[in-house]
Amino acid sequence: MKLLIYGFGPYKEHKNNITTDIIKKLKDRQNLTKIILPVTFNKTIFLDEIKRHKPSIILGMGQHPRAKKIRIERKSINQKRYSKEDEIKQISKYGPEKHLVNLKLKKDDLSRITYNAGDYVCNYSMYIITEFCKVKGLKFAFIHIPKRYDLKQSIRFIETKIDEIAQTI
Image (cartoon, rainbow, N blue to C red; front, side, top):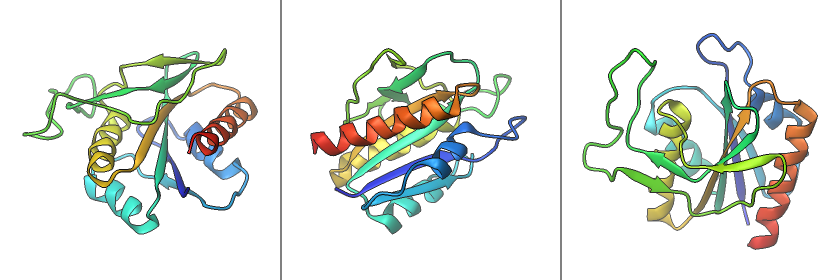
């Protein structure tokens, strides 16, 4: 098993992204690659990192500005927009309306399963990466961490998800 876990850097008015802090504090493990991606609608940036590191499993993390509980996302949709005022656009002109992740992480007391990753860059990365993983036979899951969530608790949660992934493969 070779796991790639990614989070995002700062964006818009958010000078700090909790996923950056989680990535930096996760313990180093054999066959674990940790990267921080820019918050951008750029398919090439996401896929080039995957191609460079050649993982068999990918775990994405994004910051959710309003959530209270950790969200284990199951579905991405074929839409994007930079802000709520912008017109919604398709990610892929000929792509399906939605993609479901193929790595089903379990929920616990700290988390819930959701089917709405929004229409910003987290959803965009999910859509692009899920499509790529289907073609390449890779496993993929995505988690939204609330912006104001306790950092130590969120790190422990992600560590348990890494252990869960290792046990299922």
